[in-house]
Image (cartoon, rainbow over all chains, first blue to last red; front, side, top):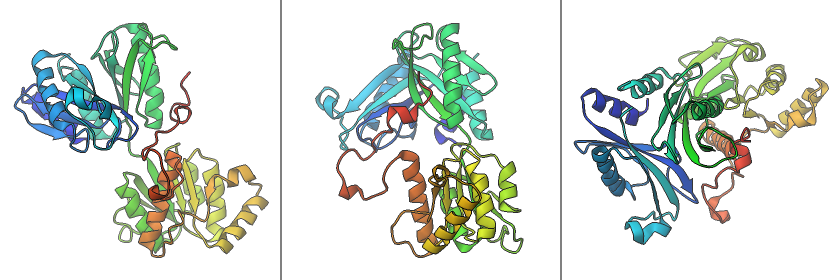
Length: 104
Length: 271
């Protein structure tokens, strides 16, 4: 059983809004492969992860924003975006993460 | 359609029935979501033409349990890049068949389970093929290995470990294994057993090409001795063959650790 999907389904059944963040691409070296996901509820609960902990705080903020605006976004984190995002991966890889509000 | 896709996805994962989730991650229709099952689908990526292309791609990926981003034109055209669709497969666990209910099999079964396989242990001897001896296996079958394999479900993700090291069992089951599309076929035995087995298989008309599909003697060369260590050597070889890596030490080479599979390997049906 997938704990992330399990949790999101529970939240939605309880009437809570939620956002899902999924790793869709990994370039060079990355800790977790495509398909790895993390979800956030409107109350700020978190399940799952998308890296070794390097980008989770930033993704959390993006997810909360997605819940608010309903706008999906494709995010890129990595060594080359270090300064732009203030977030980097110590492993030197680049990961692409899709963040969406769960309304389907 | 409130909650439709999510609850179906949730249910499919619970029942371990195969399902793919497709998401438009770039281009027109950003955020579009589809659930694709072998028989039907739900949701939309934007329009009917695109949906049709996505469903076709998703079913192909689902068959191999693969996850990939595919590109299409706005109306599902191939060779166009406007729309990027992330397609994630949720397939039932791949199968590991272990033949020969010896102590090594018990360790291999445990490790197979640990790696996420559905493990089936088979031996013709009822005294050895028991639940008690293989608590971690999903199924323990008393049957002649070759006859059992004839009717078993084997696909490209399946792993077949022949640990009987008795030509009476080995040769027929390996011949049967070669008739499947199993991604990994390994056979245990000493160099002598291996030579003897190879000769017998050749006598039975098995070609050199087919023989090269069999990992024999089974496992990576890590000096494994105990059943547990041997299981690790076998597990390492299974992973290395699947990913196309050499199985050596990372410290002994440079380059990316998770070198991605070449595109030609990961998407053989990409046009």
